[in-house]
Each structure stands twice: as structure tokens, then as C-alpha cells.
Image 1 (cartoon, rainbow, N blue to C red):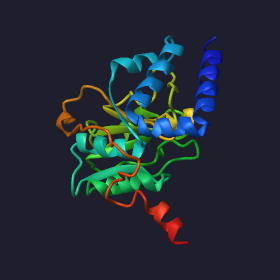
Image 2 (image 1 turned 120 degrees about the vertical axis):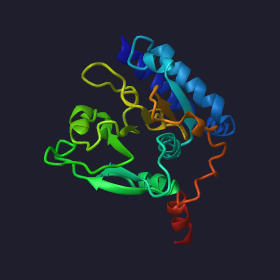
Image 3 (image 1 turned 180 degrees about the vertical axis):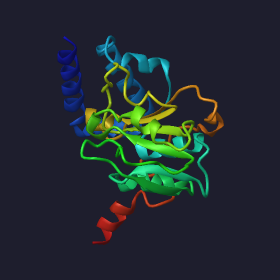
Length: 232
């Protein structure tokens, strides 16, 4: 019954968002629309993995790359800090790290898209665990290979909204900080959120209001692709 409900929700959302008028409405009413989309998804699937997310702290953004900047700041990542990231990663993640003045250090992953078992990670201020294509990152293996087991893990769940791990825990909520992008599932122009759990190492004072306008990109190159295309 749940898959039928979810398919119905996605189909309805796609048809609604497909119209130009709806698209303009989404742009002008971004924050309430995202909140409504989230609430509807949970109501349609109240017994699904989405339900526990109602009880977690969350903050909506236009894009997950913006949410990642706040996550890094909450993890006390600042100028000169080091962030461990897998070598298979998108450039938007690099821009988010550069936006806080940190330095990325790459770690190897195997063909199964999990951290290489032969890797011992160097000390760092934070580490990014990516749920590639919605499949859960092996956090146990990752923690075993950290130099400091208390290093903050940020779960990159940009492609895994409504996915769970083998224990039924929703992806994006398994670590101190997690970012999720649901616009790629619902096909809406904007839609991402940051979620966080209680952890003494994160700084909640770094939480701020979501970015208000699609035109408000971060200072470092988030519109590079757009500007490049315009100059061609």
C-alpha cells in the first residue's frame, strides 16, 4: 500500500509542478511550499521511514549545497580546517567546503562505493559520508578507519530521500549532521534540508534562516556553470 501512496504523491506533485503557473507559485512561495511538500509526504507515508524525520531538527534550503555550508559551520569547520571527502564527488561539495575556507582531503572508495578497506584516514575536523544513489554508506567501516573516532560525520544524502539502511533508520539522520535533497525526487525547482541530532561537538548558534531567493548563491562560484553558459 505504501508504494502506491508514494507513487500517487510523486505523480500528483510532478503534474502540478509541470505547469508554468505552479512553477511560478513555487518560486514566490518557496518556504511554505517546501514545508507543505514535506508535510504531505509524511501524511501520505506516515508509517514509512519518513515519519521519524518529523521529530528531528531540520532547516530547509533551496539546494543541498547551501545546507552543507551550515552543516560545516555547525561542525566548527572554519578557515584552515580539513574535511575528508570521497574522491568520487561533485564540484558543488568542493564549493561548499571552500565557502567556509576549509581544505578538502580525498579518501579512496572501492567498487562497491564504500570507503576502501585498505584506507586509514588522517586526522580531520569533519568527514563526509555519501549515500551514493540512495544506498547507505557503511558508517561502521568509516568509523573504524577514522584516526579520531569522535570526528563529526556529515551524511550526504542528496540522492537518498525516503531511503533507509539495513536497520530501517532513515538516511540523512544517522549522524550528527545530514543533508538531503528532495527536489530530485519530487521534481520541484528547489528543495533540500539540513537535519541534526544532539551532539556536544556541533554548534547550534551557526544555524541561520534559509536562503530566500534562487538568485542568492554563495559567494564562491555556485553560479559558475550558469555564467559560463551565458558567456558561450
